[in-house]
Length: 547
Image (tube, rainbow, N blue to C red; front, side):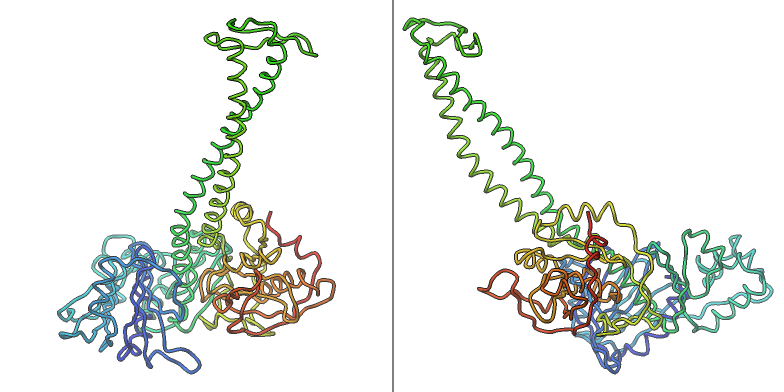
């Protein structure tokens, strides 16, 4: 987040902060801190007054944005977060200021024992000040007498805080007139924000249009979107990069102990396979014992031998014996070993059933934690920014869906192979992961694999499969095409499968609850998001299914 972009963000946000109350403070990921904000200054008609100020602090690509949506991530708060809560929780912001060249935001908060200043530093993260921050002095700007090209290519830029690293990468690519005009625009403040997205979901944010030569250095096919509202542009970027990365890392961490348990139980089952082979070999000794018993008359009562040759229908067979025992004692030992092998196999079968059940439970727990590791592909940006996470019935999102979906063959195939056999996995044309139950048990498992912000779909006028559309976070929009494809997949597992269309109802998974005492798959819908009509394509399953 360049300092000039940070300046535009602060110019738009700071007037709305005084009077806002700080609520929940948590750290869902490394270097990411989120502050819950509540108050009328942030609200707008038709929108909630709750917002979430998210700071991703790092030296390479820091970001500060305000989102309507929060991460559904539970994390143990470190000492730093507990300290912030102690001084800031449920206190109101009195004033806000920014040292934009240093990329620091200062929030004066009403403390119990006097004002406290919350410092949001894009490089170092949040901290507390108990004395007022130093006053901000407006920086100097180069005038016409300064050669901007020489300023960027040499070491003189160190004397000009306004010549930021991002600006130093841009100005040499412009002619002198355009470079001077850009600097003048930045000095006056305000202006649009430019969001660049490539086909791989990469995002670049800039306070000025990036030259084609700069985009070429970045690599990939970049598309430019112009946003008038810097808050909306940063919210879009933060939700599609910071939220996605934090959610994925959290799910990996949550799934890791279950993965270790699955590996441990798998190794134990492999050991049981080896033990079964050994016990089966013991059981096979009964045949040797019976053969020896049938010809025991040939040997003396106290006769001992290292091996004996016995006559069978297939000819002579040599049987090795324990030379310390008599032939008769060897026969009894063989019977005894065979009996031990039989008892061992009976015990092993029970032990294997227990371990397999434990591994199945651990696998389901792992999938519930990691179900969206290959989650949704990137969604198309919105020109007006942010937007509702809920598609509107009929028209739905109203935006053209992405034409080309990402290739997910490797990861998606591995994920599909790990799913319970009662759950099918599909990939929508827009790159979203779709789960569908094969039967009533599969419907219940699919719901367990859903995050609260995922979409749940079902036919509106009769029984059908339960379908889940995975999302990376609550702010991610689902394109119309994906919703229609998921609805058709639900209809293809219903009594309407041979008809031309079906009416589909949908809701957030957080509002779908299994009914106690009812059959698996029976649910209670606390709130519906609406319904829509989906055309049924018999070939859709084959087209979208994951191997």
